[in-house]
Image 1: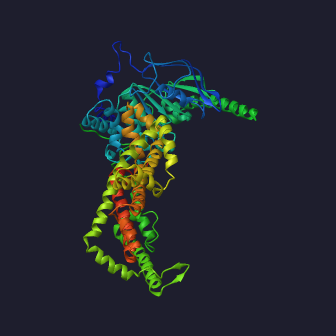
Image 2: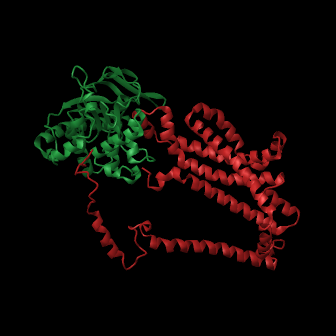
Image 3: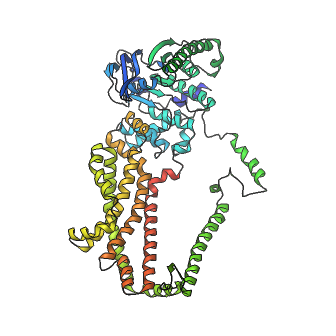
Length: 291
Length: 306
């Protein structure tokens, strides 16, 4: 992929808005702080902890993956950051402010089927800017910019139902980014895609992020995906959801597919596999003991 | 602003999938009817005869009923079902010609159509409004739902005495009864549609900064639209159903009145004309509703389901 093409592609972004995310001290926005966080749900008459005693500090511009088996509360933690779920106890702040409701400054990309099927691809992406008070023309022009960024400019008039799963997810990413959020929250966004598409989506995401440099919290249960994408992998254990490891990934960027077979990559993968395996075994034993 | 798309994702260059098509065509050539991979929609010249063929079958089915009716009526068939007093299709046709040339017949139709229009307009506005409120607010649902559950099973005919007692004019009683018929399917389908709003879409809208009102307008109502439109079409059918009940008992004009007086005046061919007119007008109105609502469901026609 030639850098000339990419630069051209990214040149259309509103760089003043990208820079505006850094405050006067030169620190970027998008600092997520989680202290003693508990999230409980009502479950069969009682309470069930989805997230237990989580401590996490995510620096501005960091790419963090929340990795863990299904049902470990990683999505719940992400939903709390988005403002969809209120914590039972503890503190969750973003740039010093408590999170109590969703905000366009925290873009959300869902696993699938989250586009408005009755809106065209362009209108889906234009929705955020429109809600922020942009005129219809401005919103559409922002939408076109972001659709070009994900390579779907030609599909602006299509309805989401006519697109493949991967294309729909790219629209979803464009839609979340169209508000220039300081935090991008992604809930297994590539989980429903086939392996080939997934790799391309990951590369594409990293390219976009290199330009945006916003904080990304990315939930996945795919170890390869976590190692390939992130600066840090936060490993969570199943029921109750606890953070059991925080692995810093120092693989060089930009990262491309060839990295997936390098020995360094394998080391990280082995480390994560071992942690996840122990946890899964423990969960199995718990389940068996329970019967 | 010139933008070059990412070559990896560039959709402008179609993948080799295209080359598969001719191969399929060759393979399927000996039996053109068996082509599961090439949708008929791409080939209007092949779809046309298939559809006209089906329409021919439908017309033939109706014609067959006419023939059976003719022989049963002219031979005076009487075994459990009695055709002795039923006029033959030819007699009905003659009566229809004379009715079509009398202005009174059209007056009946105009009166019925007017009642339908007024009653249906109220039903659409109140039904959709109540449905959206019930679907969105627990309070509204708890207050309105008991009434709906209680009144819905009461047939239109059962409302006639009370409607006559309570409402000032005969016209308003008939319109009220017609309204009731249309209202229930509309309100229930709207509630159903609104409650089916996928949670992920509401969350997506909220994370994009949408207000409650914007969510209602951009997410809930468009999402409920297929169900609302279904309710509108059913409501139109039931409106005709109820209108007839109202017109049979009271009124001076109207196609229901026409049908019932024909019976009391022993004008049997006119009964059948009345019935067929009701059927025809009801179908036509339902079709109009569907056509009028089609632009609202444009996205579904374009394969918009996620």
